[in-house]
Image (tube, rainbow, N blue to C red):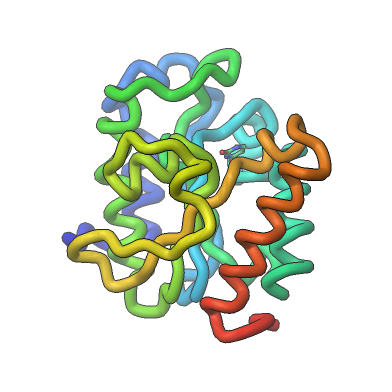
Length: 194
Ligand code: URA
């Protein structure tokens, strides 16, 4: 894991980044937010319309569900967690980010995780895109979720879970999986973290 500056420096780089064509269609880049000393880092897929408009990650419907379950299962609220995305700019029409966009943005994510590493005890990747990008695999989320994994060179474990948008679409069974994985995150952080 390389170090490439502070979270503020990464945010400044992200705000003016033109490394892929999402720079042409975004309202603004969404670098991520939260305390530099966070114990838990959440990595999502990419900003949606609400995030592109508001400049903060997970402020739409998916974010409401994710943060509600995080509070219930982990005992942490938004102000205590660093939240970011694999791709920092909204893909038009909320299409999936393309491989070349994920690759162009990877340095920003790695720099954030390096800056957060001194206090970060766990990274939770949310959905296929984040999980594959962070773990460097093409395996699907259902095979990867719920079990902490190590990434070579990173001090903190990574726990994958399903995306809250999938949980919203999938009804109570899908929500239960998200809740179960977040409860695992709570245990890995040493019990209910609040
Ligand atoms: N979905 C994500 O993956 N990230 C966001 O910030 C919002 C929705």
